[in-house]
Length: 462
Image (cartoon, rainbow, N blue to C red):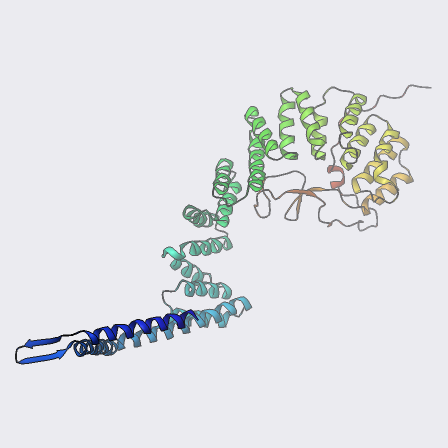
C-alpha cells in the first residue's frame, strides 16, 4: 500500500518536472569545431539522458566482458568448496559411525578441495585416530597448531595423543601451552592433574586459583579442590611444620565443613603437641556433621592415660552428638566392650541389629566379639561370624572403584584430584572359603577403629 502511494507521488513529481522543462523558453546552441547544434531545452535534456544511459550500458558491457574470467574462476572455486564441504560432511558422519575407510577417503577429498580449511585437517586427524595411525594424527594436529585459528584445537589433539602413549611430560607441555593462550577447562584440569600427580601442591593451588579467576570453575568446586590441596599439604607438613599444618587443615575445614581428612590431620597435630582438649573439641564439632571411623580413632587417640571407664564416658558424649549414626553405635560398643560393660555394648548395637535391619559385617563382628568376651567360644559367636560373612560390607574410602584403608588427595588409578569418597566398596570378596568355612575378611576388623586398652584385672577369688 505504501509502496504504491510512493510510486504515484514519484510519478507525479516526474510528470511535473517534465512539464516544467517543456514550458521553459529558450534554446541551446553548441559549437565544437565543425559541429554546430541548435536545439530546444527539452530536446537537449532528452539527449543528455540518452547519452548517460548509453554510457552506462557500454560500461556494463565492458565490465561483463573483462570480468568474465574472474567470474569463471569464482564459479570454479565455489564448486570446489561445495565439493570439499560435502566431503567434510560425509567424513564427519563416517567418523561418528566408525567407518574408517570412508572417513579416510572423505578426508583426502576434503584436503584436495579445501587445502587451507581447518576442518579438513581436523577430519584428517580424526580419520587417522579412527584407523589407529597415531603418526598421521599427530602430524595433522601439529599442522593445525601453525595457524592461530586452530592452534588450541591442535594442542588439545596433541595432548590427547600424548596421554594415550603415556607421555606425561609431553601432555603437560601441550596442556600448559593451551592454558597460557586461553584458560579452557580441559587445559586447566590437565595442568592441575599434572601438578597433583607430582605432589607439587603449591603449583596445584595456583592452578586452581587461575581457573577460578577466569571462571573456568565455579566457587563451590574451587573451595572443594582448595580444601583437598590444603589437606594434602597439611598431611606432609604435620611432622616438620606442625603450626603450618594446623593452619592449613583448619583452613580446609573452613572451606569444606565436615571434611574428615582435614579434621583428622588437625586433631593429630593438636594431640601430638599436648593440646588434647582442643583436639577433642575439634572432633566433636565435626562429628555432629559427619561422623566417621577415622574421627573416632583420632578422638580415642586424644585420650591418653584415661581408664576404660573414663573413655566410655567420653565416648558416650561423642555418640550423643550423632546418636542415629552407625559410627556412633560402633565406637560406643567398642568402648563398652573394652570396659567389660557387655550389656551397654549390646545396647549400643541394638538399633543396628533390630528387626527389619540388616547389620553390616563390622556390626556382626562386634557382636561376635561381645559374645566371645562374655561367654567364650559358643554357638552365638559362630552364628554372628557366619552372618558377618554374608552381611553387607561397611563403607570404606574408595576412588574410581579402588578401595583404600585411608584417604588420599588423588586417585591411585586415574590420578584424579578429590576422587576419594566414603561409601560401600565393590563386593568382590567370596562369602566362604574353599573348605566351606565362613570367610571373615581382614577388612572387617580394619574398617573401624580399635581401642587400645590394658587387659582387664583378674577377678578376685570367691
